[in-house]
Length: 308
Image (tube, rainbow, N blue to C red):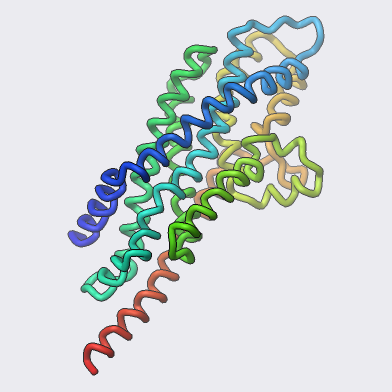
């Protein structure tokens, strides 16, 4: 256990010591917040007002709260995965400079080494995503705050869970990479594509029926929906207080993926947590097994060579 703590501390310190890796990971959610607010704010606003029946006047603050909730839910859903890929650069660096070879021939089990990389990446990802959450809350407070204390706590819980998932996903992918060039290429692909396939950039309700069914098999979809529900629950409560028709509120929820359906059956929040949690555990298990299989074999070969 002492070795594990030392490795986690070593990996975490090296990440924050490398200013390039740290600022690259930190600036990602900031850029997303600026871009979303600049280019998608009016789109989300128009989409929301188009779903309100004619003759009903919506308070400007409520509209702002809806736009802000949708923006921050999209940003956090994407950041928890893309930041994890940035935080995982240390794993690839250790492969590229040969550090991992020194660690594998030492009396450290491959499982301990793999788990130390995972935990340190998760911690750095979580710290950055929590900092991004604070920025998001400030933004929402400026344009329209409808979040309760419970909503804030649930959003932070979503950040933790999706950071676990993002770290597991990036760890499983980065296991097969051995250079920073490969890492940069994969990071660019994930950054540009993940937001679309998880419904952060565009609600999956706007995709074709066939594509919607495919996307519903991806865990990121459920993570985005969790963020949507908790970031906009206060807005929906206010809409109920205004006595808007239930059909109107349900339509808005479905249009932004707060309500999602798996083969015409609505998915509950509990089921969303279950899907994300199960996939995360499966990815962690696969990553550790791959690590054990590769580096245990290399360690055995090294010992045989030294003995010879």
